[in-house]
Image 1 (cartoon, protein in one colour):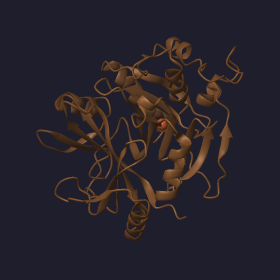
Image 2 (cartoon, protein in one colour):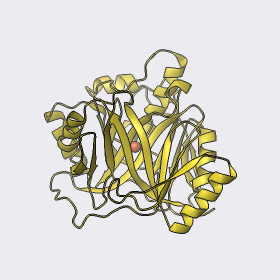
Image 3 (tube, rainbow, N blue to C red):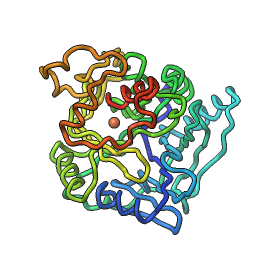
Length: 329
Ligand SMILES: [Fe+2]
């Protein structure tokens, strides 16, 4: 099947206080507010109308929707056909005067994630000026699923995503037509955490932008969910900054691989070194970690990293499964 999705377009977050969250993503996330009302705001870092929409809500905190740009109008028709074949309810979306979407569809995936797919989004005439954290792409979103194998099948069969790599069968990285290593990651979790966002990622120009983003975040009082590392799967150099309002984090990354179109997915070991290749050679970290023994806590403590975003009920087997996935991408 052709890859129907060209790239990740946006994520939509529900927050308790709109002004607070807009300030956070502007000052710590370096995003520009492109449009706003009393209950919502659209922010971006490129030409697109938005990469991040924030909606004030007293009941929904965290991920509300994710949007993927399709490769063509024909791809939209084909996705509609596949949704109909599977009897998956879907509705048409698109409001150039509102969300900046031309034509699209909205449906819900097996884990309860609301998904938008669309043909075109309004493009701004100029890119926001950036001289400190220079942004390239809205790159990927990663969320949790109680059954990543089933979630992979859904995204492969309905949207044409291709697996780039697995970590055992507990995490899968899926690529779209742009062939970045992943536009979507799905991590195994407890059923209670299924459908919740772990993080979204913005690709920046270089490691210098990652480090400047990291240092400014700390100076402005933010916490790091994970400090700078390099992932084995994608090659990314990444830092994860905790969003205090939602429990998710956002990632600045550089050097994220573009894989060959015929790349065969690897089945990677669940090791702390898979999480961070710079840990190779560290005493006690070389062996393959059994489920739930990721060395995440000691690493985080050593780096002075907060535990924000840790699943509730830490200590249970389910929480340990979620922790495992959370530490690996
Ligand atoms: Fe990521």
